[in-house]
View (cartoon, rainbow, N blue to C red):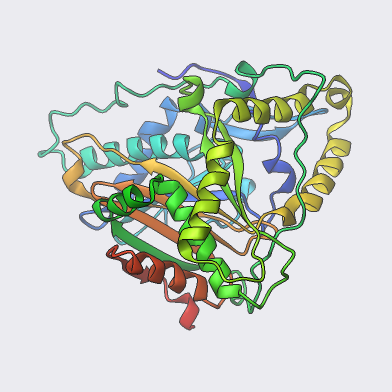
Length: 425
């Protein structure tokens, strides 16, 4: 059972999101599950109402204190499940959502969970969505799943520790600093209004494993390499030669620190590629990206990132500064650094379902909302034998997506592509 709490601190990463969130930079991500049959709204609503009491992390509302934002337990009714009514990652207006910071929608056979990032990262979002799906399926198919109990999975940890603080090691005198210059920005005609263009790319895991073995790299590094190469090819000669392509890659820290927290626990590393006058092959770009990521995804470097981030929060003077002044300072720092990244690729990993439920769920996907300086992003997850990538973009031009897929097919990886049709409107 989840422990009962009346209030809680935001984790170290979550402190940023309430400060910078607005209608155009929502900090909301979406994880979707595609069912075998059409979704029944009333049963989905009942499933959410049955599961939510077990998850204290999602049962929170955001409050502004004198010095910091904090969470307070939300005892209001569960927000109503609605048919999908906005583009993915739209702003969650808490006052119109019973003060909750997540929403559940559906469309046809698809169930969507959208989460404000202050609550938790993709790890926590996947666990919550899986339990909603399990409960929904028990209600939807009571005869077939009659042996299953209406409870959360026995292997689920409901830990709400701040793993950043727990694993913080005070930096020495030679405190590491993180500075970077302006990165290349993907520009062009934007889609109208609040439209978000989606391109879903599905490929067999067996195909990509064969290719990553050839290049002696991980699936994640390979995908980042393909993405950076596609951006390089699409914008070659159209951008500034002195601005690197920088792809931000969130790293789940739980395996490195034996953590099971439901709160945020990830670090950002960057794959950087600086194009020069000569032309680069895909293999050359991939090697640069792979080496860049390998150098950063090491325990010692992750220790340094945690130390750097937490030391700013733990600074005694900073802790005494009123929230309004902190917000102003944090916004200024964020605005000045927001153009240091070209794009983001996040991989929330392999999503596993228990055997009785697997035949009822066809697929999963993950999508990211836009942020300052980043007009396109990729969310990745895998389920069964498929790797699923979703481009979210506010640019009408789809050259990057096409070159990405062409690079995959050039490596003899079978690709299936689907869009939401926004680019043609």
